[in-house]
Image 1 (cartoon, helix red, strand yellow):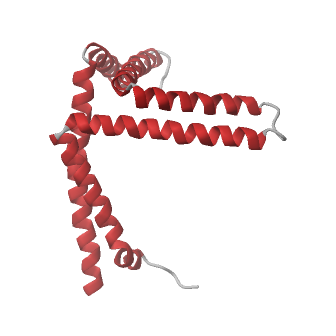
Image 2 (image 1 turned 90 degrees about the vertical axis):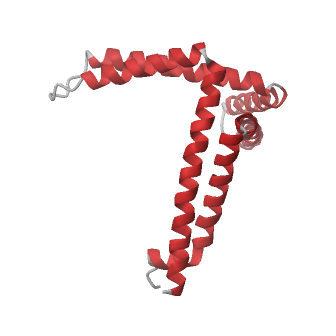
Length: 184
């Protein structure tokens, strides 16, 4: 069995990198140009994930029933996933808002934990201040997101779009570099 080099893989599958770059670039353009559409797309994608995960959970629960005495826990998780999916599909704006508030709460809680940890953790380097600064920034971010959730959602998706455009361009350049290996 021969050894496959990265160059051989790159020459063979350069087009996959090209497709990834095009998809990233298109998503980025939509996210920056039509942020509301991108938000709706991401929310529906989340709903689709909840639905598929929930259905798989229900199927798994019934498959595990003969061998796992707590199969019903898996079933409950699957049913919750399906319910969440329908909630997202029928109330996408509310789902986006709830998710934003959960992210804000997460940022505040993890920030507070980091600040508290700074007083109990000693690395011996005297750099615990970085935990305080990071924790404080996390708390501030969480508070800002909590008070202006719609602006936070729009800003996040817009920044995600800018990232996707840059990443897409990088992938396109890389794909054509790989393609050039075909001619070498």
